[in-house]
Amino acid sequence: MNIYIVSFLVIILSQGLFFLWAYLNQSDKITDLSYGGSFFLFVSFLFFQYSSRTTYQTILFLMISIWAIRLAGFLYLRIQKMGRDKRFDYIRKSAISFLGFWVMQAISIIILSLSFIRSFTHVNVGDVSIISLAGFVIWSIGMLLEVVSDYQKSQFKKLTKPPTPFIQSGLYSFVQFPNYLGEILVWIGIFIYCISSNGGAYWYTVISPLWIIFILVKFSGIPPIEKSREEDYGGLESYQHYIGRVRKLIPYVY
Image (cartoon, rainbow, N blue to C red; front, side, top):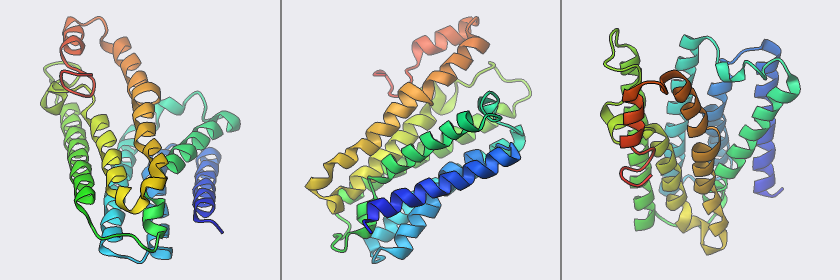
């Protein structure tokens, strides 16, 4: 069977099982965990079932696994503290509405996976090249931004008397959403890393980084957070000054 069909079936099946558990238990404790967890399970399936386990493929496996495990662990610890994710309060009890979230997540995983599926399954993958190294460097910068920004935000929330009700220090003094900038760079890095094995005929895989940019900038990333912040801090002069001074993702640009 075609590897893409197998991959899509594995992803859809895993999301269906996660949905059933979350809906039947009316719990969010596996919902955030499932995103990164799904990537780790899927990339492990590709690596151990299909790849030749070359140095190139091993590095790629570690890149995706490190990102996925870090994200899943971070979100799982966060939901353990929160108890529930308020974003799902209006859809959790409706099977159809709640299923919509899992369908969207399955679509996202499929689209993002397009960038690396062939790199694990193509028998003639090349050695690590300069282009691959460039992708690895971009991925590393993205991972560093994610880890540092998440740490800085968690430390800020622990302050008993924060200087302002919202974080605007550290990486957040350069851009409003450094964690999302890191996430975008991670997937740009993975796409570039895989270019050499994907070949010119597979340039459609550029949809992967474009998709994560669209999702974070226009859909489920920045917009709902901006709306929530505006409700909480919109009346504060310090907040209006902050969003007027600091760009969203790219310093001095956007």
